[in-house]
Image (cartoon, rainbow, N blue to C red; front, top):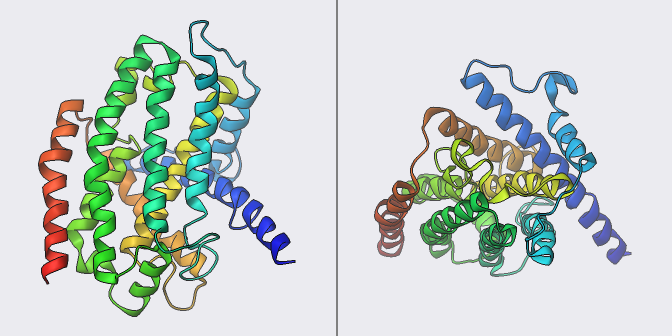
Length: 315
């Protein structure tokens, strides 16, 4: 019976179906907030206030012709969109949504494993660009490799630093520790800022969207993807946005800890705050060049992350 319940949780709540639907809602919120900041309406007609527009976009892409370049590495080209969706979906299973301090799957060290899955997502993007054998994809893939791997080091340092204070490498353990103490955004504000900016870079959002700059590279590393493959790529980006927002909320905002409301509602509320901050940055700033993004990651964010770690160790 427990095995059946676990399977249902994995498929329905808080599993794949719930995460997929919630990620589409987060995309809708992101587009609406971004539009309001630019004095536009954003999604409007599909569903109430356009809430079904992200789902309609996915359905439209699924119905379109799936074209593969003749010179592409076909197996890698076909498998990378599946990997891109599978990795963040797997990472979402470790986010404590079910109850306070426990994800669908939890173990000591799951924080490191989630960071590994997000790193493999970056590697899959580079493989997707290489397999496309397209000049725009190749340039986008090179930019992606430079940017994502530049942000990886300060991201990992800033996400793992709270573990030093809490004495655990479990996401659920960090949430439980903050439920009994102050959230880490108060205790380690520098680490939060670094992790926040690094996640924007990992998500390739403005101002770090140079890997797929439309005015230069069409769609960057995803230029050759169409139809079902592009639908998987688009959906993977939404799920990664959800996972990044919730992981940051768990590590620095206490996750599902809070009075009166169930943990899942607190987690969603805090992750939406993270999402709104990302939307504001997206609307306020212009695109950085790839050298500027990499230089900022190495010369500014990495030293700041190390300073926060030293403070956590010594204080």
